[in-house]
Structure formats: structure tokens, C-alpha cells
Image (tube, rainbow over all chains, first blue to last red; front, side, top):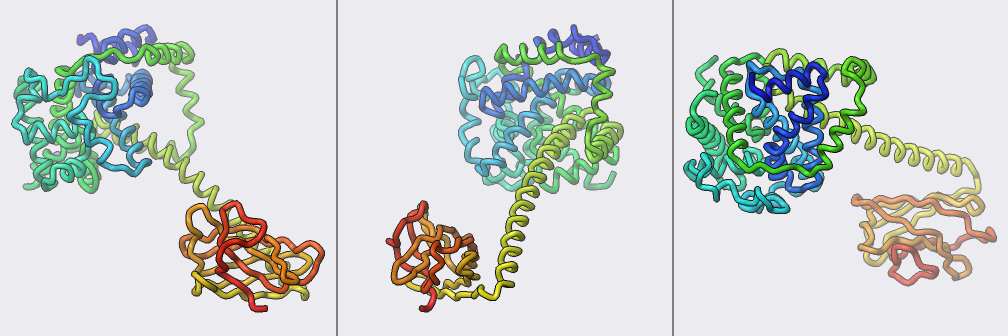
Length: 179
Length: 265
Ligand SMILES: [Zn+2]
């Protein structure tokens, strides 16, 4: 059995000993994603705590037949981070502007994650054709919605949507097809 | 499912990235909730791709406080069965929402649960904000009601008169009525008086024997309306003239600014 899936199964059964190894295995994976989206260390720490607490409480909802533990935790973390950043943007009524420099630049604090995704030529994302890479990065790394991306790039919404789909399909092929 | 189904699969990709919004979001979630297997499969594949994207990105150890806080929280947790009992404290409508979430999970699979849970959380927060807003509105209405009750009470007194103030100077359109009782005070109602400039307020003066006496400051809202409770002048000498001037926000002890409202002598 996948070691991550096994830890989730143990947590679902109420085994508290499984939590720390689960955290140590997945927190370094999701922390950079969260930090990149919320762009604030304190917010990122809060989101991360929420996510892992929910994982502990909701471990029984994980179904290994439906996806990998990585996808499960990554989706939860991104969803929480996006919720957080959109709530903040709603409150401050500054819609796209605060994120304008978020894509090219590293999240606050720099460090190991300071290198832009695109700057690393080795990644599958960097090898995507530019129009697809651009929309995927805006959605994936900056947490923008399709409408925000369309406004930013001055492209029709339909174009943005189909570029996202095409980009994800190419990435999927690059990663070796069906999971 | 129909010839446009391809469009849903596009939406599934955007949805997996959390970038779907507006009508598309509602439409896609409704479609997914009807149990579309193809979209569920596309979504699932997209999610695996996104996880791979994350895996090829950088690793970074989070601040140690997060781990510490979580382990403490875990330590303080009662065993799972007792925790389940605590959930009965939820408000009834929350139970309704939870039922909707459970139904959604059951129909479409666990993968959209996270999103529903996040939304549930947001709805709870928004409900709390709405309650607070209602409470404030209620307080405001209650204060207004009390004010009107006070005015009606005052009007029952034969000694009460209603004084008209007319716009002057910079505010010719402005007007006001003052329900006034020499011994009990009164209430001023202002219309068409634009809000005072930044850092300024309107100040009411009661003038007796040619001498003005400060009778409080007030503001008007964006629609030019305002109201102000006025205390009776000490000594009980009848007020001859009421006037309103523009003054510093904290008020002045004698009028310094231009007159915007005045009663006829
Ligand atoms: Zn479908």
C-alpha cells in the first residue's frame, strides 16, 4: 500500500501516532503552494494548520480508489489557500492589483522556493507553450480565477478556458499519461 | 450526455485548478452533482496532474510552530467517538448544510468535499457577519424609534412649537424643522444639507438677546439628511433665533464659520 494512503487509513481509524509522520511527509510539499498563493507567512501558517487539522478530522473521507494521497492533500491545501486569498481580496476590495507582481516574483521571504516556476527549465510547466504556461501559472501559482486571468491577459474568457484545458492535458502527457 | 459535453470537460480542468467562477462554476457543480462519470474522471485526472505539478515544485519545511500547534491540538483531543457527539451542538441550519455536503460527497465522490467544506466554513462566517449587521441595523432602528417617540411626546405638550429653518449662504437648498420646547429641549430634522467638509461638522446655535449659545454638533448623510437632539437652554429664556454654521468637527464655543441654516426672527 502507498505509505501516504496507509497513514491516512490509520488516521481515519483514530490512530494519533499516524499524524506526525503524515505531516512530515506532506507539509513540505504543500507549504510552498500555500505560501505562493496567500503570499504571507502568517496566513500561510494558519492555512496549513487548518488544512492538516481538517485532514486529521476528515481522514475517513479519503477514498484511495478515487485518487492519490498527494492529489487529496494538494487539492485541499490549494482550495483553502484560494479561499483565504479571495476572502482577503473581497474584504480589501482590491481585486487583481495586489497580485500583479505575484507571478513573476517569489513569495515573501524568498528562500528555496524563490526560483520562479518558469525559470526552472527542467519542469514540465516550463516546457509548455507560452500561452498555456501563462494561464496555468496564473491559476495554479497565483490563484486567479478564469475571469481575472482573462482581464489580466486581455483575452476572451473562452480562450483562457481552452488554454487551461490544453495546458493541463499536455502536462498530463508529460507526466506519463493516466495516473 | 449531449453534443456540448466537451465544454463541461473544459470546465472540469478549470475547476480542478480552483479557477472556475461565476455562472460556469454553478453550472459545472450542478452538472457534476448529477453524477457525470466523464467529468468526474476528467476532474480526477486534472487533480493528479496538479499534484504532479506540486511534486516537481520546491519543498519547504513550514515554520515549526505549525507542527507544534497541531500536535498540541491533537494531544488535547478526546478520542474520535466523543468528538462526534460534540457535533450535536451545531445550529439546525448548519445540520441542513451538512446534509447537503454529505449528499454531495455521496453523489460525486470525496474529491469535491474539500471545496464544499471550505464553502460551508465561509457561509458560517458570512452568516455571523450578517447577524452582526442585522443587530447593528436593529440598534439603529431602535434608537430612531426612541427619537420619534420622544418627538411625539414633545408634540403633545401645548408649549411645544415647530420652528422652520431655511438654507442660507452655501446651502440655499437646505431646510430644517425643529420641534422645540423651551423647557424640555427638542429635535432638529435637516434635509438637503450636503455632508460637512472633511474635519468639519454642523453646529446648532440658540440665540437669545443677540447672544449665540452652542447647542451641539451634528453631521448629515450622503442624502443630505440629519437629525440632532437639542437640550433646553439653561435659564429658560425663550430662544429668538436658531442658526446652523459650519465649524470644526469637535464644535466651537462661539460661531466662526458661515451660516447654512437659520430661522426667521
Ligand atoms: Zn460531464
